[in-house]
Image (cartoon, rainbow, N blue to C red; front, side, top):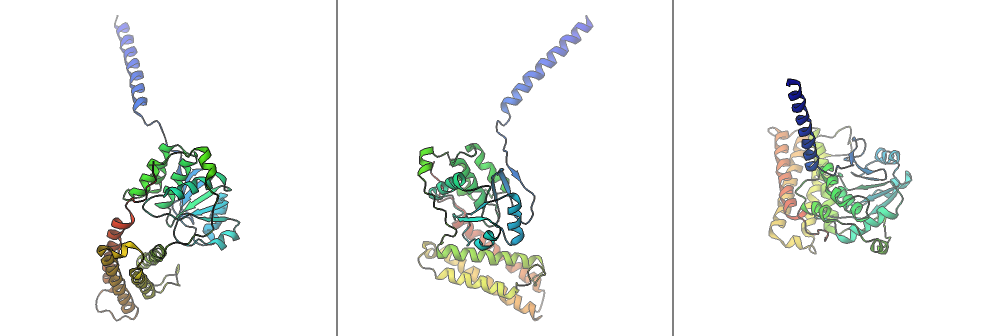
Amino acid sequence: MHRAKLRLFAGLMLLSACFAGEAEDATAPKLESPFVKLPNGALENVVKVDETLYSGGVPDGEKAFAELQKLGIKTIITVDGAKPDVETAKKFGLRYVHLPIGYDGVPREQAQALAKAFTVLEGPIYVHCHHGKHRSPAATAVGAVMCGRIKPEWGEAILKLAGTDPGYTGLYKSAQVAKPLDADKLKQVPENFPETTPVPPMADLMVEMDMQFEHLIHLKEVGWKPSADHPDLDPPHVALQLREHYHETNRIGEDERIKKDDFKAWLEEGEKLSQKMETLLNLRKEAKYAGDPDKALDDTYKALKANCTVCHKAYRNPGRRVLEP
């Protein structure tokens, strides 16, 4: 009798476990992202979508292009505003296509061009922006969904894997609302894939400012002095170039943002801070600063970075060009 009770109890426990397993399966995610983030080499933030589609940072220098070649890449699509290094790409047998987008979303025309490119251009294809963290994962997700390469539910997963900041609401929204294009409509999308695309003066200057700020980040990391990695960087000259870019940006009259008081004020503040940094770097270089120059430079750098952040939050990050459903 005792053994019969034990067998009954064991049977009930097994039955309970079966039902519990069914309940767990029912509530478990039905979709698991197939994407993989590759280890950093000469390329930054590389996400492998499938065997013939990748997203990542800009290939900077021959080592990076050699790494693309090793991955088997045949076509590079840049969605950055900067002019691509077409000549080095050709040296490695790679084709460049320039389809720039902003941080505020993927416009429909560029989304369709990306979908067409993913369909007809020779692969594997590597899509990049500057760091491969924001624009390229969004562009890759939208284009891949629209050409039917990945399921719509997977689009956002590419951004999350790349580490796209949730503050870029337009980029996330573009990935969230992207849907496959009708096959006939996809056929009608022009096969217009330029090597380089002219960008507005404002965007061009912002790209240059971003590049100089990257140089400042490097100089901060090495103690505000020239380094073996970048012997070409003269610290005061980097700050001077940044200051000039702020000044020139403020002079562009055709961009509506220049007319806004807050935007103009942030540009003027950025110019003042970069000028202060230039002065500090010259004093440090000549050993004429009375006090701790590194602390003063670090404080000025933090203020400059904060100024950029608040301006980006207001004007660069918001989703104003979200892809229509």
